[in-house]
Image 1 (tube, rainbow, N blue to C red):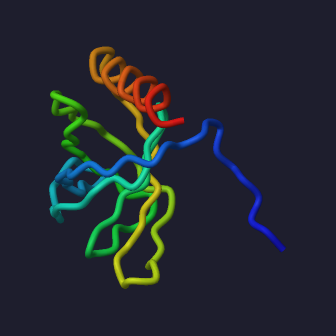
Image 2: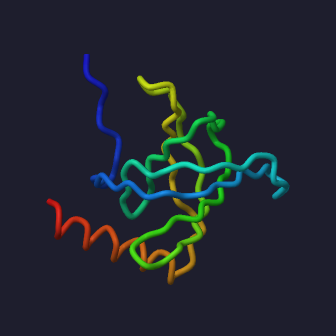
Length: 116
């Protein structure tokens, strides 16, 4: 039995280094680290880290896209250990300001034009 595709948009492979901070519901920082994106679209990304991140956790990401550093707020939808022992987390963006949303949109569009 195959897993049903649940994404609303296709994701494009994109390896970008990033830093992340996990915050609780009160906005208090409790964990931080480095990771990398594995893929991205206009509504989310897949994040690879050395440590697991709890599902439904809020993460603040600083991602280098092209010549811009974009600060992104997201919610972790899932977190699984991969075959090499790292953790892959699906992150859904939310509460983005217009300029960051536009940088992500342009990056995804340009990536799609060049590589697909």
